[in-house]
Amino acid sequence: MGLFDRLKRVVSANLNDLVNKAEDPEKMLEQAILEMQEDLVKLRQGVAQAIAAQKRTETQYNDIQSEINKWQRNAQIALQKGDENLARQALERKKTCTETSISLQASLDQQTAQVQGIKHNLIQLESKLSEAKTKKEMLKARITAAKAQEQLGNMVSGLSTSSAMAAFERMEEKVLMQEARAQSTAELAGADLETQFARLESSSDVDDELAAMKAALAPAPPVQELPPSQPTNTAQPSNTAKPTTPVDKDLEELRRQLDNL
Image 1 (cartoon, rainbow, N blue to C red):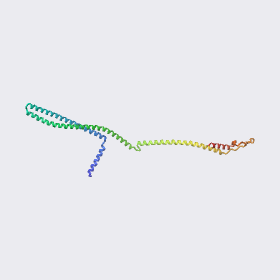
Image 2: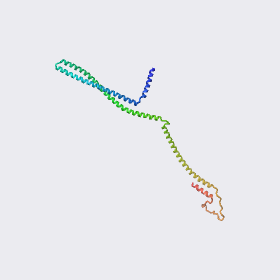
Image 3: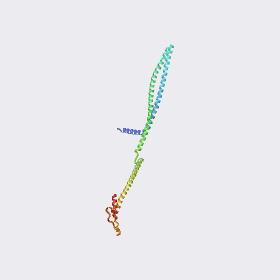
Image 4: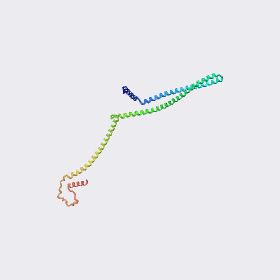
């Protein structure tokens, strides 16, 4: 590949890229509508000119038909008057007008077909223009929606940890963590209170038992001798005997407490 061919291709590629970047869909739609409207105006002018030409040809054709009829009558009059030479001249003029009439008829048929074709194209262009205007509004709405969606996508994709959304999410996470800590603290406080009450209950049982043991191990007080005048009754039955010394009382109290455990 030659150098100039490569340069041509590079220039064409760059130009195409610039054109693609410069093609705003909304502006291009507006431009297309304007061009179609300009074509419609030109086509309407062409239709008007074709119809005017057709009217002129029709007028000429009608005039030449009048001339033909006139020379036909003149020839008849001259022949009735016995002037055959004049009648011949009138027929020659009629022949010339007839040839012109045939040419005008061909032109008129051609112009009529041309006018019909231009009118048909005009109707099609008007229909396409109306359809294009409707589509333009629809496409403009879709372009607007697409731009809004693209902007929203860019905003969402552009969010980072330092953005407002990320900060909001961090604050939400902190609130959740704080709520979790408060709940766990409340649960621990309730558990600790139950533990304290359990300790109180267990400690009271232990203290009672310890007190009873202390009382059992305490030294007995000295036995006081009875006065001589009051003899001691030692003949009481064994099944009705009652503890008479402090030690016996302490042992009896200890037995009672053990029975109650």
